[in-house]
Length: 489
Image (cartoon, rainbow, N blue to C red):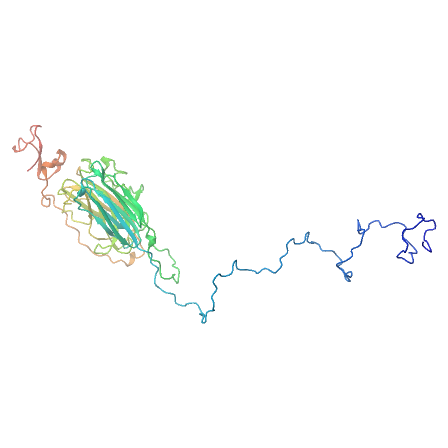
């Protein structure tokens, strides 16, 4: 028991503590217990192994404003490398390099990286009239030209296979049937297929007189050796993409190319197929409304089917360049000539004024086509004007008569093509004086033609033929309607 109890009348008759820890109790105990104890629920048994052997001598005055809520669940055992490798090298080198290079190569190789050449293969199955079929593949990019062609076939149903290897480029496949019924299916089961590096890029069988396909890309050529040291201040006028075919321009009323290119062409567009009387698109397709003749039948009588203008040198050879003011060019066209072509004549013209055109002849017009059906024709090389950014050419085909920018015969047709030229070097261009071509005579330059093969309208236009009864006097030739036909005078 307590020797000196603090309570005079203790409530506990038998205190539980035999040996109290406090030998001398507080003389002035608090009257009331602590209102706000620091530990709401003190542990019944104190910790036997406290983590802190001694309390902090200099505690912080204020608690941490943003203490962490929860400790890390899975702390890393070792510090993490900033950029560790995913896996060690499976085959490390046994020895380090004895003599490493101290500096990178100062002069890289200048050789350009040339892409692999392209293989083009043409598979052609001829119909029952092989002599009517011809074809060509043209490189349409700068410096291009015809790379392969085929014609003068003689064996019906023959299978033809032609393969060439050339640098990558933009190509145009043209196939022509002079009768105008394709290679299938009324007279045989012909067809054609074109492959580039084993992939089919063009095919066909049923078409009319001509069909064209484009494939490849001009941008596939050799890469430059190194980047240009100084950037150009002006955009280059030379296009890096494939030439865009002509399209109809309602403002001028003709097909036109709206980009400066090395070639401008209606081939494959059908823009100039037929004449107005046969359903030509957008007639008259001329700058000055030169009307087509209204006589004839399509793919029997004269017509202009396509027009192309291409950059050349002064001799007419293809060049690596674009159509430029003061530069040279030539016209290529596909025309249809009547019968054997002896009475069909092609005329070429140019102008540098598309508003009020003054047509300058580029050929004499004295030589007939000399071949019937669909025929490829071209003009001599000519110099482009150095004063106009937009220029035009005209191709006309006529039956006999004399050369004129707008002949009036019933079988005649004219078509124009408008194109842009690069004016960058216009001031430096040296214009060459060229003697004008000799104009054809209406009487002395005509070759002998087949009068008996003519229908009445053509016979009445023809020089050297008459429509009437054979072996009759001039007075009686046309007196009666019976037994009339075309005859030589």
